Image 1 (cartoon, rainbow, N blue to C red):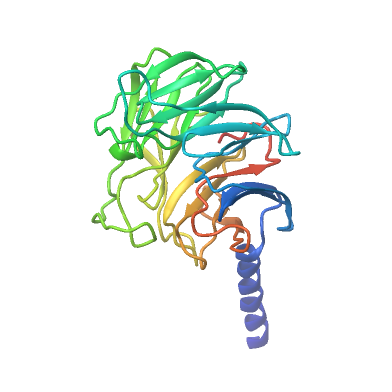
Image 2: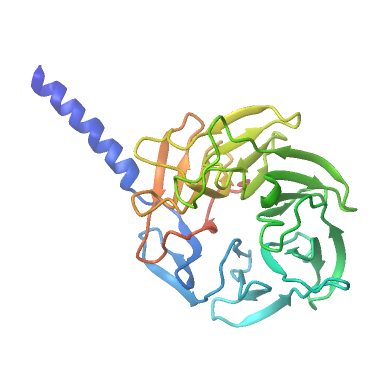
Length: 314
């Protein structure tokens, strides 16, 4: 009897170890340690490009090309052969002579490319000839060229979901620049603390996506958690810093919301003892983790998990 119990415990422990050790059954595009790379499901590098730019956004396009930053102000579309076929460089707008940084960009369904210009305090839609065809002025309470924006995503109706890091607030803008919805993070009952790692805590959020339900899923940045809120601002689900056994969340960054309800969470600045990505069920079970500190490091802020089911939101 005792032997069967011990075997059962060992089996459970083995399964838990396998869940935490197994990598994703997907390819991963990410950037850190001076390069952008695509890793195969077995962890081997299948494509790599040396690039010193800090990447807070990355996309593989349907044609296989990569949308990536070459610097704090320049975004390019690059082929797998590393040929640049499109580029846009953000420069100070008329009447502004300060610093500009780009932390978010996205190829739109109509072929235009959205670029969020912190410092300039605007979103621009850029055509294939790199000309600005539409501009949306952002409403900023604490203008800062490094912290005006983090992730920005287009919504189906032409609106934009904008994460304002300096304000700790997600705002939904219509195409004319009117704020039609917003949500401000709170400290979740914990005191503010300095630091980029797990010890840091604040409301400097990173990402947000709009779910098919109409709710908004928020990657809290140094809030160390994921929060789902209704259109009325009610919190209906959270993933807190230490809810996953053996995993601590630090700077929570990118999100992939899968059609089955699972969520892929980016975990930056958490240290080599923690995964950089993980898929989590709604009852907070870990499906797989991604931890590759050979290719990437503690600054892996942006990733695009490739080959996910149709209907995934990121």
